[in-house]
Length: 509
Ligand code: UN1
Image (cartoon, rainbow, N blue to C red; front, side, top):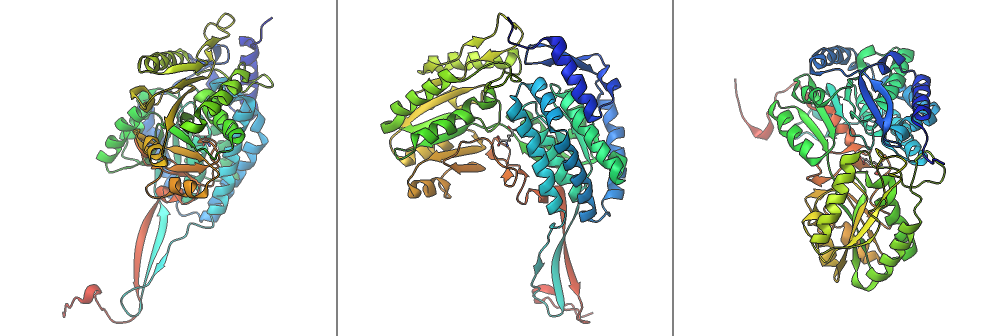
């Protein structure tokens, strides 16, 4: 009796969901196979475009920009409002596509779509709040102010693990800011991309906005490279590995473009002696094992005080043993598959390296369902006790491995938290307010996200999302992340009838 759905069943479900979202089914008639990590079998096929197509796409986006930039921002918001409604209506359809293409459980896949709806709502409100400042002028009869204008074409390169939400964070904000978007989705998730793009196309048509405001180019790395290099792309927002960011950042900078980089994380939780261990255990397991360890916010390290380390590890091991691993579409599953064989191999390599570097594997690491689906990679999330923060712990392995490290003083714990190249997310579990404040202070966590008594993953869209150091420094989503998508003009207005110069300069002509 098989527990995984058949290839035909998955292909039919994907096709139907894509059709309901309005995907032109001709686009699914290409020669590039799409594989489902659920069973390792072909799910569909798509046609790839290539680098030569990018120029025309960016030029059309530039034309759309020239029309869209003068549409009042609250009117631009109406397009995003409609997009949000359509996403809400098709939450289940898009959820199915995300689940089948990247292996998320139904709840997590639908949660991803909910993030899309949320960012649309945020952006609609924002469309009436793109505020500039009025600044006191040093000269009489003068006013100083700043105005935020649309920036230009935004290129979005997204990763497989949040195949559509990251596009929506960029797109909802870019559109209200007056910018068109050209999207290069992950090669591994073209169906959910085409479905999201079809919903945007529909919102554009229904609201009478310029047709080329949202374009998607399904293709390989050459498409991404063409977007990075194109002088018509004003802002390049890229999510992926630090290696990718290292290639993208300097090339965009070289042409004086802007880039917004959201790269790897190596997120830790500090667990202090006063932590509520029940809540802590649940918080850690969601962040470390959820999404099969494939979020950039996944918790990869626990830094536990020596007085609670044993007890905490026991609780975590017990919870890990109970984790339901299996088909992400089956009810009750909490851990779905890894994306592909390379992810599985990198997990095995890291586990081996960790043990060579003094680590002790306390639970997990094994493969599941290999007989039934030899090309799907289900794994037991692993916990490894490490005596210290060795090389392998300082690297991001995109798989569910949680390293547990001991500490004695909070200073030492914070130093360990910060002593990795990445700086995305972090948390502290404590009931001691002073400890929490120390962690959040200027000399505390050096990450873009620092939490208290919740895990490192699962951020809401209302805050700015991103991190420091090798995470790339970009901020997307809420708060004032919109400023990256606009250009600021400083305006000085003279209504005095005189011409006093700033800094008291005299120029008597
Ligand atoms: C990512 O993994 O690229 O905070 C994004 C989270 C999600 C977003 C993750 N809201 O885990």
